[in-house]
Image (cartoon, rainbow, N blue to C red; front, side, top):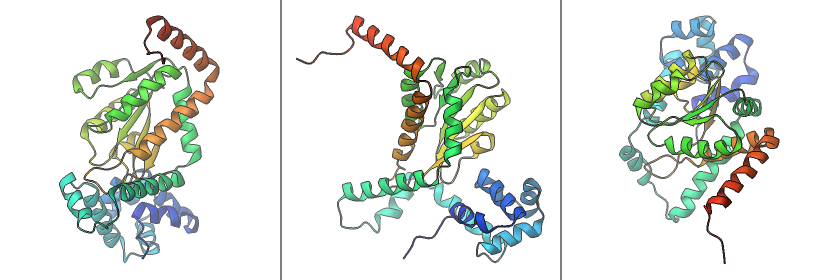
Length: 289
């Protein structure tokens, strides 16, 4: 039996068959998913600049009795994505198949990667990479409690590719000085997956106020920080574990790095040559015998 599509997947699948107003509404929901559809029908219609009957028609086209039924399904999804690691483990462990964990985990990760690459909009990806490659823009990166390591990895490699790259510490005391130096047009790359963190949302909001362009890498349920993002790249992250998998996020990071490197190769090659000379002078790496 095929797995039931999530609401965001239902919306994306339905887009080609929607009227102009319905497509405008669906696009608004997807751009602010899932937050946009958690309020009243009046608020959603006003934010999307459509009529309330349009909201009802879209819900019915997706197979729901009306907006309350649509919203009830969405709330169930939100509840599922915010479960604690202990609850998450209990849910999948009960029906564990007999195959080895290596196979089950690898199957889940490969499915996540395939689904992620299948839904990433190429124009959106290219626009994000172009922002990161622009030498006139200072690039900042930050993540949450778990995803901070991805921001750290990104900045470690991006500093080789180009200059003016800064990692925002996971300590809140370091944010005001960093935000103080953030100029209009600078770029903040943000990582935020369920359970979404208030700190990430706050920094994204303040960076947006400073005029920064926000690039958000999140999960398929979309972090609330998306309301401040210029570009949002959503990944599939579910795995047979108490924690979500960051593999698809890592692939996205490394692909962004490869894209930026390609755009800036002339300068990047020069930087890498100088860096190798410095490594050689300091005898940083061991020589193989």
